[in-house]
Length: 330
Image 1 (cartoon, rainbow, N blue to C red):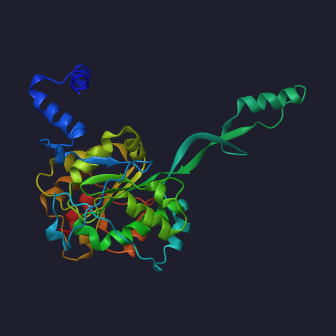
Image 2 (image 1 turned 90 degrees about the vertical axis):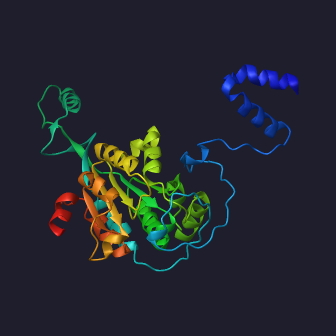
Image 3 (image 1 turned 180 degrees about the vertical axis):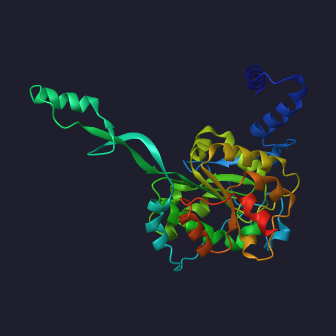
C-alpha cells in the first residue's frame, strides 16, 4: 500500500498545502475511512446530461409550499406525474409552423424569385447542345428556429412543475428542434426522455433523471453552468429561449444578471414566464427582476397552460420589449 501511495503522489503531484487532503481521500478510498468534506464543494453547480450520466442516490425530503420558502439549499427528491387530459394536442400540431423562421444556408429549387443556379444551368445548356433553356433558380430555405425551455423545478415552483413538464413534452414532440433543461440547485438535460411519444413514459423517464425536484434555487449559478458547456450554449444560439421560473433568486442577483445578458447575446428572443404574473397586482419589483428586465424581450404570465401555449404560439409575432410594457403598467 505504501508503494501505491507513493505512486499516487508522483502521478497526481499534489501541492504540499493539499497533502492532508490527499491523505484523507487516499485512506477513504483504500481503507474505508469516512470521506472528507471539501470546503466549497457544495456550492459547485452539478450539470447532468441525459446521454448516460450516472444517477445519484435520491434522498427523501419534506413538503414545501409557496414562493416565500424559496431557498438556495440543495434537497434531492423524486417526482411522479399523473396523466390527465389537458388539450395540448392542438398546441403540438401548431407549434412547428408557429415558431419564428430563419433563412437557412441550404437552398432548394424554385421556378421564380430565386438566384441563378449556375451549375444546373450550365448542365442544361450542355445537354441541349448549346441551346439556351430557361434559367435554373434556387432559393434559400426558411426553417423554424430552435426552441429552448429552461424549467425551474425548485420548491417554490412545485405547484406548476407538472404542467411545465407536460408542455415541454408537447414542445419536443411538435417542434422540429426543441431542447429542455431543468434547474434548481443542479442543471439536467431531459430532452431525450421527452422524445418518447407516450407522455406518461416520457415524464417517468424525466422524473428519474432529475435529482433536485422541489429543492432550493440557484438560478444564476445553474444558468451560468449551462452557458459554460459549449454544446449546451450552442442550443441557445439563434433560438427562442423561454425560462419558466418565478425569478425568486436568493442572495445576490449578480450571477443571474450576467447569465441573462449572455443569453440575450446568443438568443433570437429571450423570455421569462413567471406564474407570479398571473396576479393582476404583480409588478417586477424584486431586485433580481429589475436587474434582468432590460435584457428580456418578454415577461409574461406562466401561471397556466393556456397562457403559456398562447404565448409560445405567438413568438413569431413582434412585440414591444418587456421593459417598455412593464414601464407602462407601473
